[in-house]
Length: 149
Length: 97
Image (cartoon, helix red, strand yellow):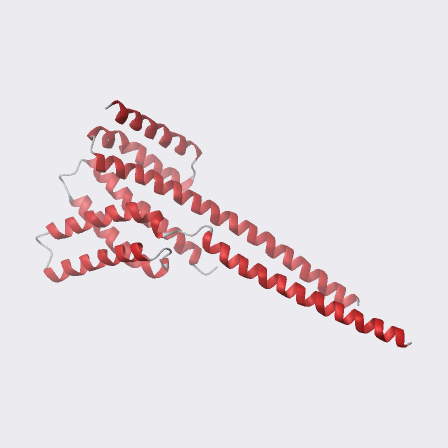
């Protein structure tokens, strides 16, 4: 009879070890999944920087040359574009949700100036618009992934 | 000049190949690029041609990032299904015991 008791105790210990191992396995999977999801499918600053830089430089040139823009609005516009570059230069993977409004404002303003610029060849103007739109589309992808499901 | 023509030709070929394999809004962006690439290349302006190349490169990166995100989602769903099945199995074994 006592043998049955020892056997039962051994069985309980084995079950507990299995439960602990299963729990550790699950925790490991969760940690691994959070780490890999950061690396996979994650937009990095360097992915958008070449095009974003061109959009910002053009934006600043237009803002600087716009004689109709009040000084305070010009300063604000240049602050926004400097903020965009600061994030892209200094953060490997920006918080895209927080960053999206600023880059969207700058890209939209860039596009308005490009559309209004009658000196540009229409095809060149379309290329400039496409640059900003590609950057925005990349950021929007990240926002769509961040949205609660 | 010959080198620039070679680059222009390979860029055109690359864009055409990309459009063939693309889908959805990626195809839209690439078609847009194809529609102005000849004009931009004809300008001979290095900065404009560089920007054209950067657009194609950015779209390629976007395509890879999206594919990776989708791939990760599939892997994650499979792992979750296995975990749920394992949890269900353990519960039924526990219930039987």
